[in-house]
Length: 455
Image (cartoon, rainbow, N blue to C red; front, top):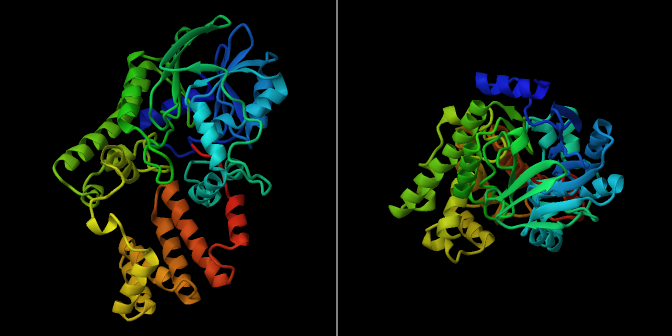
């Protein structure tokens, strides 16, 4: 058994890990005869086919060249076929590096991948900005389990990088709708479309290896089904896809993030537990909606139990159940949260000034925010300090307190998404304190430099 498969077996069987499970080493590990994986951001899974290599995902624009180099060291055969498990930048951006090394491969992808790439190009600056927030501080907190020397690689550590989807990213040639089975060399591969993290996701079944290639349906973290800055996710269909995979009784599971898994029973248990966690949230949120609960009530009453979240492949270190709950609400109930005043709300600044005037000034709100923070109620503290900041947008003392409170909250959060957004809030206020302004060109440039590609 390979070192990676041995590690994942020990982690799953013991229920805990003392080392990273999501690693960005750009190193290849052979998992069996003609099967390998390069651990990167994202991984690339490679099969020998008898007619060149078949690769699932090309990793991102900052890591694709290193991934391609590792594959070339493993086999003299070229990558003739490249499969996009979905169109996220960290899965497709390295395709230009594959083409530079081997010539343009035949690219397989779902029909909606082209639409996604077009949308990313149309919203490039937006995506650069939101990913700077999402992944801000990744090197400091290692919330994806990255080794310290690898975190900067995952974060796209390059000041000159300005394109969310790198120029030269390949478009799919072979279009998959629902299912497509083909022979690539002497390897039979079935591609299956299911919605989950994205609407363009494929998972694949390779019967000769009893292998399922999952893409981001399994990421060794709580499923990325609630990302607060991204488009709709589909947790119910995600769970159904995991159960379809389990029904094949695979003996090898090959994810795009995290460790590969071996053993039919072990794989079945993991797929079942991840699917069950998603199904629980969907069932309880929909039941509460049917009972007339507001989003506020649901967010604070529906939970995934701690034992489930302690499992090494369900830890809320990237996304988290609270965000998934909000996404389920959005999927079934729209964007309005049920509070009448928030249907057509006042501007934040106008409401904040009115509240500050009633309270006796922004300084009173700051004092109360600090008091709540010191008492351990950082949720209320953040509301109060935002009101203070919006009512006094240019006051350095107010924003010094705001930066401090958001940094305190960031330290207590588990998910990278929450940490990144709270860190960005602190940076906004620090820019005011420094006199550069929350929307200065210098601040925007610093955020861009922290940008990374998305899971």
